[in-house]
Length: 305
Image (cartoon, rainbow, N blue to C red):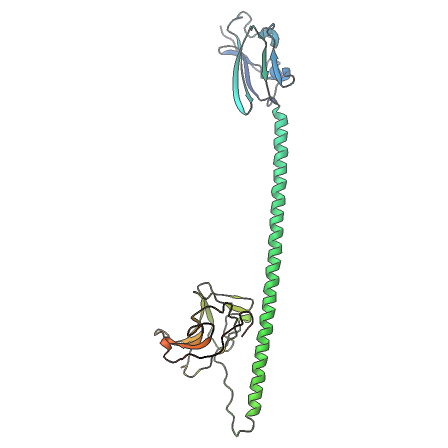
């Protein structure tokens, strides 16, 4: 017996099953016909019913093997409850066959709607996050601008006081026969203009995460510092002046501004909390050229001093 089936033989075509039908082959052994399209149109109320008083050939309306009643089966594979199921239905039966199915087309629409809502929710969350970042950035920019403005005002006030003091001293010295010219700084750093020396070429290098923020050099009191290029002339008698904000008045042993010899560890500088808590002093290696100054304790941690 040599049997060959070609094409769909006039059977309806279906791209994908709405009810989760995967395959349905009717016949015996290797001689069988794909009848899934016929089953698809016979589904009623999400149920596929094959009456017991109908042979499969009567149910489908054709018989691939007309002279073979026994042995022919419907081999059906389908999905239900998220699982793949299979069943074989004989040509003749003693009871009705009822197979419960699901409407996968409706489920796909539900999945699409859920995906759309999820995408909208993600979009709203992203917009909310971006808005929070924008508000935070504007707040930081405002705070930095206020800090720069405050520092500039305090610096200008300090410089004005310095100029007034110089004028007063100059007026007091007018009666003297000779007045020595006031000293000029050999190095001056204005951090509102960067880390460059405004007088000479002793520009600073920022070390260990040191940074300039809001027109000020920011130090963490632990590892950060700034270092200048070496002096080009000998430095003996010297005057050091700084404008700063202490921040934590309880900190100890901080060298705020020091002139240090290259290689031998010798230094002179302004120190804070080194000799006693909350006090300013003059520091040097092993206090060889400095002593404790019994002054008032520092109480201002917010303003420039």
